Length: 295
Image (tube, rainbow, N blue to C red):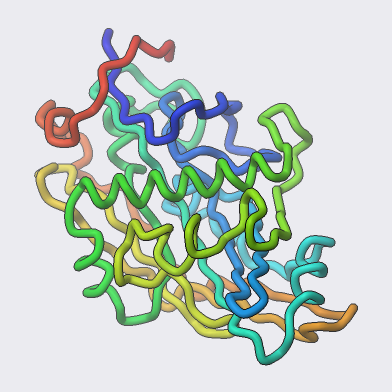
């Protein structure tokens, strides 16, 4: 049995095939379980050139299945405190939440573990494939204009993977570390800094004029770009509205705090047509031939 995948991050570290939060941000390419990366919160102080990143511990597949209640939280750790104390109330501070899943398969072998255990690999991979990114509410048309081809979707997913890799490298995390979610406080020039060249407002340039970030305290939607299971030459776009808000208080003080809220988010059901997708998907996306992966 041959397996085909699109590996979006060269040299990706092998991940444990479980649904539990890992100490590192899960990569977008998971050809065993197809769960995708974890949702990642990025906060960028454009004025002071500081950033804060938090692994939210919920994979893209878990979010799509509706398991996102744990995303609502008061955010408090030493890296957030450092970021907020290094900021001023008048600074331009923006935030985003993103995730991606970039593994696709033509294999009819069943997925052995993870959120899609029991589905064939080709069904599970297509179900979870795609990009989820925050953006201004009502900007679905702008998102579709920027992410209008499978090539651009893949570029954005690759940017997500590269950002996670940079954060993981900066924190020295590996898959064998204790299950504590990664967080990072970085300055311009540091590995993992969410600045313009590596991340910025548009996934490091991958999403063009579409901005994935908004000012803290601003409500944002989440947008998803995926493939139509019945017609894999066609992109499908979804908007979760209203989706999220990240607010901060006490900026510049030792008592600074922050809250992340996901509001009225509806789960996306597995499309019935997922079982229909054909072999033409692999040639469409130019996937690389890989060795068979044990189920």
